[in-house]
Every structure is written in structure tokens, then in C-alpha cells.
Image (cartoon, rainbow, N blue to C red; front, side):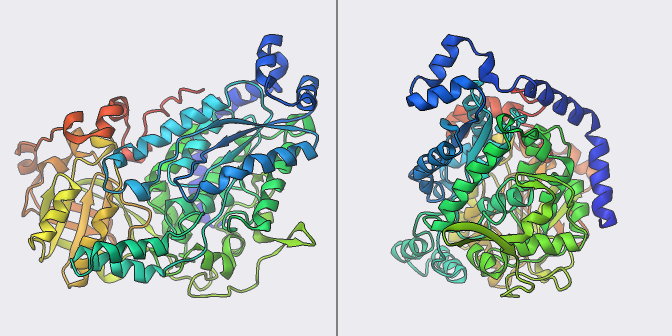
Length: 608
């Protein structure tokens, strides 16, 4: 192992010792009672299989075959999740073929950030992760199940499914992806049309046509944002079948992988002699593997929140210092939009996750000695699935990348370091995603323009007030203020100003989309303005320095003057700001700092 990766892993193990032992102890105790339906009363059990076919009822009475819980985020409105409509029937058939039963245990909400960006519904985005975690736990709470299949892909959905399922971590669990849509309009052209629209040079019809050519069919959006970062990280953690992440929906290989995932989770179940559950597979080493993979691919900054929360649900304590230290030794091996122009289909065709995992393993950057859903050892994930005479087979990843502009070996990286940097100073502490920012734009020192809402930035742009060097300070966007919405709508405006030759940066206590890049953005800054952070004391004209190289985030105002200033205030009432404040005041008042996962639930986790 690389000494830094080992050092970070050892530190996490030591830091998490008590909480991890407590979690594993509870999971072991719950596991001793499995299968839980054996402990149900006759009335309980009758309710549990009342709607089953006679043969299924007989199977469930005998207790010697697995009952698989399906928890799905299916809905018709998300292109990524629409393919899940037919998965339950495929899973049931595969389970019957193994002599087992599969029941649809429950559905979870699944909102699309692509639809809600810049809209009132975006205030519900981050909190939806915890709602998904709760609904997953509700689905698994009936004590009827021996194994779990999780069907989800996007943004908060996979983290929420994992967090909820970890409360039932004694059960073996496999995540089943649905795959990305085929490639559409090239990302460079999509980005160009968006900026032209922001500048008023093309109309809404042209913009809609470009967007429709980009997002055009069932499947996950093809850029490397939060959804596809989810899929890659889950695969590197060994919670998918090898090579499953980026197989397109509606293909024979996709259906074969779904059947095989069902069969495998049944093999892992206790009625079939299995003894490892999700709790065993989500370990300190697999969490570190996920962080390394995130950094090696320039993945979504949202995972500096989500993987902190996932780890805590398993009793594992990580923080931004772990990300930052791993970033210094993790080479950037991929270029996918927004870190390049290629998409995940191009990445998959160039060698995909199998090539990436092999390179990171051989460089000593991933832990090989981990438990996965296909057995012990991550080396199995260096193989690619294919269909041969209608049957699944796996073959080693290609020796060389078929497209070095998308995927490179560890010996020839795009950048010697990963794509995330922690910045801190008298403004607070935040994260910058540097993998998409050109080196010449990674240091900006300019006067502040302070905004209390993202719409104010667009209005100032339209008035021509932003043709200058400046740092946009967008505050009152943290979890305690309005639920921490993404601010992706700012990207075309700030990107256009950068293209005009101005030095531009963003500082905010909010989030940026996993699709954001190009403009240096210090995000997730805490303490947030609503928690008396210094952001509430910044004024127009204050000199702000954002330095990704040195990890600096500062305002050029003496500390005593900052302390003496009266902090600005904002109306955080529901009537003023809408859905996130109206529906989830309990989340806003209980949400922790961003570095702790921006979540209410995991100190302690209520399902445990």
C-alpha cells in the first residue's frame, strides 16, 4: 500500500474504533436472530405473505430459502430510474429459479436535481437523502427478509439507500444499477449553447433543443456528475457486480447482470450458508477505496457530504482532512465532463471501472483485501462482463486504455494529484473541486460582490454589473438556512465572465452540482452565514482570496474589524423562501456542519 493511503486508513480505524465496534456489535446481535420471519407470530407471517402465490407461501413457511427485499427508487419522471419499471419481474423470476422468493418491500422518493435546479423544489434536494434513508429503513423493518437488493442511481438516492440499508447491515445487500443513456449532443456543444443563452445570444427554443439532444432517452445522464460518481464509487466498494455500473439500459447484458445480482445476493444469504452482510462489506478500507476512486476520477463534490454520512451510518468517522490528504497522492486518471468533454460511455468503452481499479490497485492506492459481493478481494473488479452464448462471462480489462484522452494509466496521469482541495482561513473552511479548473484560474484575489440568493447573481449579470474581476459571495445557502440547494444555475453566468478575461470565483455556504466546473468555487463553507459564520459579515468591496494551491480562503479585513461588524440578517421564514423551509424546519434546525455530512440523523443514527 502507498504509505499515505495506509496512514489515512489507520487514522480512520483508530478514530472510529469505539463507534465501529458498537455498530458491528449491534449488527451481529441482530444477525443472530436471522431469518427474522421465524420469530414472527402466525398472524404477522400471514400478513407478510398474504399476497404471495401458493408456492411462494410454502417457501416462506419453511424458513430454509431466502426472501429477498427489493427497495426501489423507480419513477417515470427520472430518466435514470424509469428503466427500473421492469426490474422487479426480472428479479422475481431469477429468485424463483434459485428456489427463493423476492418481494417488493418498498419504494423511496427520488427527485431529479436536473429538473429542480434553480427552482423552489431544490430546497428539498439534500434533505431528500435522509427521507430516502428513512423510507428504506421502513421498507426493511418487517423482519421478513434474508437479503436486500437496492435499485437506485442518482444524487441523494444511492447515499440514502445505503444509509437506510446499513441499519439492517446484517443482511447481504447488492445494488443494481440501470445504466446510462447512450451519448447525445457533445458536452462541449451543450456548454456553448448554455453560455450563449446566458448572454442573450440564443433564444429559449434553441436552448431547449440542445438540452433535449443531451438528455434524450431512458438512462442516467451521461456526464460525470453525482449520479455516475455514485455508481463508480459503489462498484469500487464491491457492492455491484464487477463491471455493472455503466452498461446501457434495455440491453441483454443489462438484464443478465440484474439476474446475476439477484442470484448472487441469494447465495450470500444465511439460508444459503452466507455469513457476511452489508456491515462487513462497508468497512474502513472500502470507504477509503471509495474516496481514492472519487479523487482519481475528479468526481462530484457532493460526496464530500454523502460519503461522510454513509461512513457514519456504518460507525466509521471520516472528515475533509482525509479527502485532502488522499488527494495529494492520488493521480487524476480520467477526463469526463465537466473535467473534460467525454462522457461515461466513452470512459466505459476506453476500459472503464475495470481498467481504473486495476491501475489503482497496482499503484498501491486501493485496498485489495476487502470483502465484496462476489467474494474476498477487489481484484475480481478488474474484469469486464460480457455475454457468451447468452451466458455471463468476465474477462480481464484491456492492457492499455483504448482512449488516452479519457482514461490513462497511473504511470501517465492527467494530473499527479486528485481533484479536491480543502481551503480555509478567516472566512471559514470549504472545498474546491480543482480537477475541472485550469491552473491559471485556481488563484483569484478580487473584491467581493455579496448576494443573498442565486437569482440576484443572474439579475446583476443581466444588468451588466459584473463585467469586472470579482468574487461572488452567495450566502444563506447552507443546510441550516434553506436546506443547502445546489447552485448549478450560476455556472453559465460566471463561466461567461471568465471567458471574457475576468478573474472570477465563487464562495458560498451552499453546494454546486456534480456537473459544475471551470470556475473556482469554494463551496460548503462553514460556519455558514445562518450559524453566525463570517460570510454574514462580508461586505461588497472586501478583498477575497481564493487560493486552491495554498488551500487559502480569506477576506482581507482585520479580525477585530470583522468581529465588530454587525452581521447581516436574512428572512429565513417559510413564507419568504418556500418549500425547504416550510416542510423541513426540523432538518434545518438539526443539520450538522457540512464536514459532518450536512445531516440531522447520524449523531446518533435513529434506526439503530
